[in-house]
Image 1 (spheres, rainbow, N blue to C red):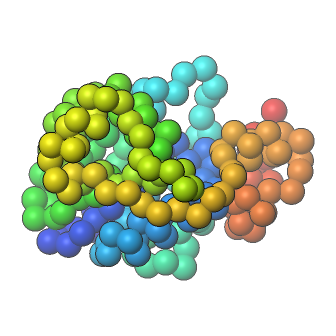
Image 2 (image 1 turned 135 degrees about the horizontal axis):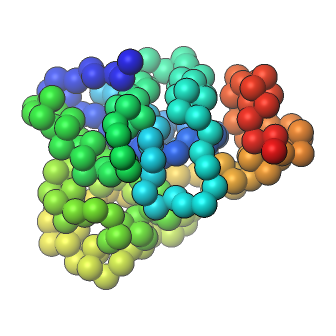
Amino acid sequence: MAVKLGGTGRTGLFGGSFDPPHLGHLSLAHCALTQLSLDQLLWMPAGRPWQKTGRGLAAPLHRRAMAELMVAGEPRFLVDDSELERDGASYTIDTVRARQTAHPAEQLFLVIGQDQFERFHTWRDWRALISLVTLAVAARAGQEVQGSAEVMEVVHAEPNKMLKLAMPAMQVSSTQVRELASRNEELSPLVGDAVAGYIALHRLYSE
């Protein structure tokens, strides 16, 4: 069941394929939680990410379960599976509008990485999305946030519509984890013991 907690607080929305979630995701989530003074951060596994083509994703039940294992121990981290339950492609604007309808008094922060922000101008209704949330972008270590000219023009014109998250340098990706898993190599340093155990138990990414 999707988490629908909310009210009048500060809520972060952290979406992605999470195929699988890794310690880089966890580090970003903790940075967002503390630097944005969030009351809660929703991890939102995507159902059908429209910008990811070719490789099939692990089943929704596995990606949901791995996200739940990753967030265990931090009560302000919650897994929201609303995008997994929605038919069709997953668009962030739809998720944000649905969240605002359910919780109109919430202040929403969209937590994304630098790579996502660089492609932000390709997202559906990105201008409307900026008007509904505060963007929280994790820049690469030692660098400023970089985006397309049109997106940067909009965020500079609207004060406090984009915040930079300071992130420690961390070299880990879901692609890297899947490649290691396909060779039955050790995953715990990249995903933690719980997620590594889940991947091994269900033989995910082994083929």
